[in-house]
Amino acid sequence: MTRTAPFDVGALATAGLTALLWGLTGVFVRLLPSLPPLTLAALRLAIALVVLLPMLGLAPTMRRALGVVAKQASAYALASLLVGYYLLATAAFQLAPVAEVAVLLSTSPVFVLSFRRIRGEPVQRRQAAGAVLALSGVAIVVAPGWSPGAAPTAARLAGDGLAACAAALTAVYAMYFNALAQRGRAPDSVALSVLTLAVGVIAAGSAAALLEPQAAVGPWESKIALLLGLGVLCTAVPTIGFAVASRRLAAVVTACISLSIPIFAALFAQWLLGEALSMLFVPGLALALVGMAMIVVAGRQRSIA
View 1 (cartoon, rainbow, N blue to C red):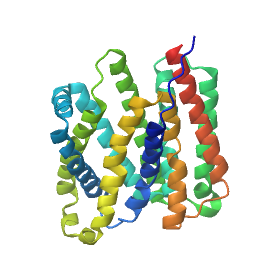
View 2: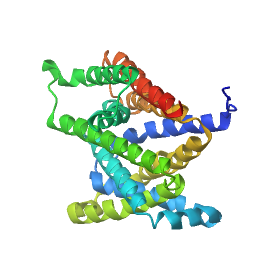
View 3: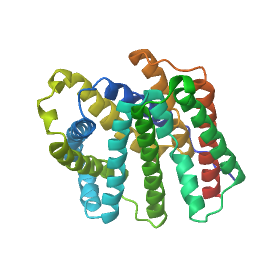
View 4: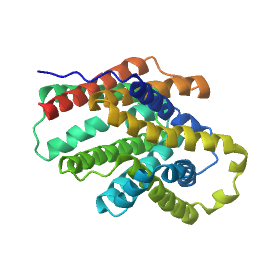
């Protein structure tokens, strides 16, 4: 007999808000063009960390969880993967159109499927069909910028490549976290988020100090509001929101809501940045999202069979 979980409106609203705020990330990054990517990523993570740290004082259980996570080598590996994602995604948004980058960042299910196939694991027909649809949709989305009449610039090529690499990192993260969870060794998600921010601040801050020292005297002081928006609205709040939603919603629901991020990103980019969307963007996005949803749903069904 199949049991139906109660419909959690609050958790669903939290997941939707998380997707909405993550969809704003590219807009904030593009509105801060004077900051180099390492410096921008370090500031973003530092602001988010400052916002989340008071929670440790209010929640003793979280302090204990963070103490446990801080002693796990696997947690640092997971944190490093996410820090790499933050750095690559930030640079990608600075180089390529926001909507295009957002679609590429959402292709992690395709990478998960590819990595599993490389490892010799069987792939369901529905998942394979989903991968074909997703890749076809991505190709349609990026095609206008790669056409003979609009040859891609080096920056756009680099941005697309960085976005794809960022998606691959999230795929590795998801596979590793899932493997740990199956062995009962997965770290607490909220504590891991705090550790990730701390590792990111140290890594990105150190790299920025060495490679981007001129940023310290840049004009970023006049854009504090944008930095706060990026750090608080697009990082701290979604980090907690996604952790809460993941605990209270079915995994397939959380994953499918996450696939709505490119839609919000495209709408915000067109509305706030004036980025024109090609006539092929909507059908390409639809194909990509349907394909990735097929991969995710088929994978979840197999995991609970």
